[in-house]
Image (cartoon, rainbow, N blue to C red; front, side):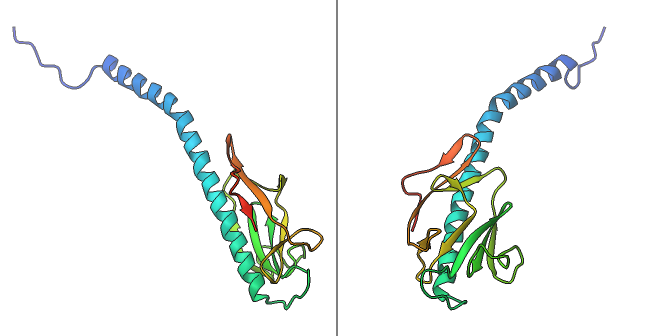
Length: 160
């Protein structure tokens, strides 16, 4: 009697392979979520530096002709956007598509940005390109960018 040769894989073999793939997937998920969080935090840090540089460059050009301790440019957070505007960022013309808007960056999903421990809302820049507090005084700000369990709050994270 001649036996027929088996072709392909049996159902049990396929189920074993699928079980191994599922176990590897379960082990890999925590690692990939951390990698994604780290990537988004790095992107958020880059965005903060880019937006502040753009605001300082705009303030140095001083398109509004501002003098004294009034803001020549600034940053405003609107939802998940960081806007760079000429003039005072707290004014209504500093909006997405507004007449004072110069630049915009989208904050990555789930990323939190804080300045001096508070969520960023607005940041003023003088006509000399220096950051101002709410009273028109020059100051520096420590900032932190975080998502999930990942936070970038190094001692080097200071805006001048």
